[in-house]
Image (cartoon, rainbow, N blue to C red; front, side, top):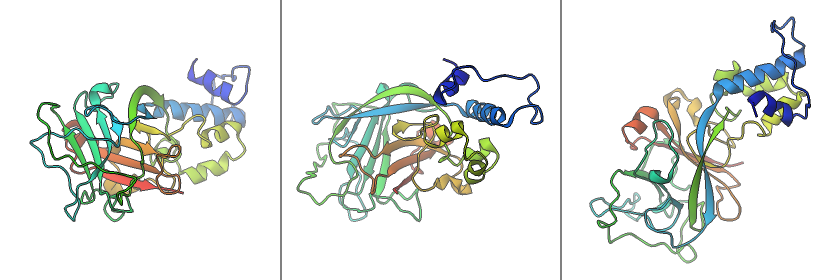
Length: 290
């Protein structure tokens, strides 16, 4: 199914939308102009993302992709600690050997995301999103299960005083998909030519625009690697100093075991040039909720 047919199906149109040779505003009926313009913009914004399915499962092997659980950690590296010297808890581990290929993302190696275990803000610094004092992003280029750190801490989430948005271990599986710019992403204005609020007021009663706003066409939510990010509040990359950051990892609230505050979402971002160099020292970490 082509993109045009996909959108026609969403709004319940059985016949293809008329296509006119002269598509200037004076010759195209307003409702068709709105729909063709939206489709043109979304097609230009098309990108790839790797969607993540998280399934509750405990005692997973050291090197597999997972949320929580025991991390893979080599003997020649120091396990991450918070500002008080206490060990951090691993929130996510991505083994890129299991992940479908995305341009400029690793094809092998293990990415890990740690947060301070006793921080009710889950390790984020809202004054400096790149401050890794209470969170840490590490990457292991070489994976050697014969050279393990014997001092990996074990957390008992039922008995220990631990603050984490994920409460049970999950196995992660991956699938490659296409997606389109959502209104929550700061690049909306780059593609649409005006901010979301101005654009939305013009197309308030348009059926196709309503499908877009509700996420039926461009849904940025869910767990994923790359692509467009989801926010319940605002995109911090609208600040010029963060505008060159792309999505590294998104962990969304899901079910009873993954919850960021009041049904929020957590995001890691990285500069594309840093990602190519496998330099994770300046990762931007944020989370928000409704």
